[in-house]
View (tube, rainbow, N blue to C red):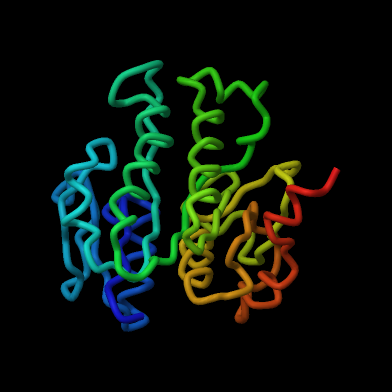
Length: 231
């Protein structure tokens, strides 16, 4: 990629893994964080920019020239205000898209969402309509015209208890655990994969070895535009 890859939330628990994986692969990385000094230290070679998805005017300088963006932001859970899911998961996504609109080349986007976003009755939706606003954020990305991938992790863990194998699903009907390391790897692999473009998928771990090649997994996915036409 010609420009840096911006990781929004790159100092967080998942974002830091994405940042480290990209830097380790020799990519130019830009950590974009609300409080970069509070999170995981950025790799020495990474750029660091302070910005907040809730405030559109902070994003332009932080994202200028980015060839790709990974958006991994922790949601707020308040019913309203700056720490609500509406502001972070929906308004924040729209602010990022607006900041990228004037780029001479359209950056590649990977949005980290979550499972259950289509299950409005789930108890998690009681927290500021978290699931509804996550889903609205996904829809904004799909409607943006940018090349994108939406990754919906299962229940996140930092250990390898669920296994190192990876299972990708679509339709938001499943359940299960997944390590942050596997989600970070999915984000990085999706950035360089044509087969992952225009796809939304859930990701879980299962017993077995970690995949050496993710392309067969991505090739097994149905494009979102086709899924939308299915009954």
